Image (cartoon, rainbow, N blue to C red; front, side, top):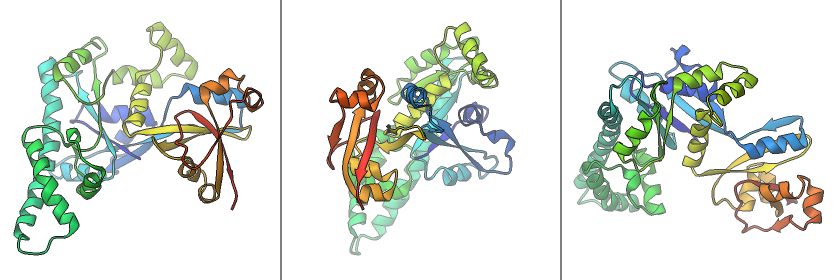
Length: 343
């Protein structure tokens, strides 16, 4: 799981990376690609930590990558460094741009670069397939010969590949290409302090098919420099419930189709990150391979039910809310689980 942060020079992408992860990538000039982890804000996790007061807390985290690339080979460095990123966070500069049309132009210029890079890959592969016309084709060659013309038409029409409806088999067959525009994307509009509404104007004009959030990186950086108590006062003084960067982190987490389940106790409260749709044995395997191998049952309860039962397992048992789930159970976001296993 990884989100690659992209944006034009001076867009604020490195500032946002530092705000979310605490890693000062702009000071790491020798590093082409800087990686950091951002804690996913989750009121449910915080409440469980308050209840159990454990020795350790382990919240869910999202890995982000920021690329420091300049010069003639900058694009190659970005492509190589972010080849494994599952999703993209596109930071758009709205604090230097004079008006919405200019902001749109900056956004589209990078999107066009990504689409062009994908189109070149498609055309190169189709050319190679054409030269193999008289040779026996492998199943993968046949899949590419069928799907790539669809991708070519989509890109030539100025549309990203993520909007195409593809089967799981087709997506697996295309994975080795590391297409840019097939990956899920979150757009973050970096606004000036005095005009946050420009983000809404941009979003109305852009008509995006991907999620988008407006944020003022200058304010967020100022906020992060304050102690926790002063951060709270700062937000209250501005009539804001939470820092915008927290919404960006949560949206990035959701972008990759991840959810969290919790294990709780006096030793540790931990959020375990799994893909949505994961069945209980595989979820158990994120804790330890033996849990999956010897899976028997999952003792589970939803967070809301747990709190309604007084925030104790005793209360949940007394109310008959603890469920024993088997191998086909699909873990839900916010489940509190104790796995039973035997190896």
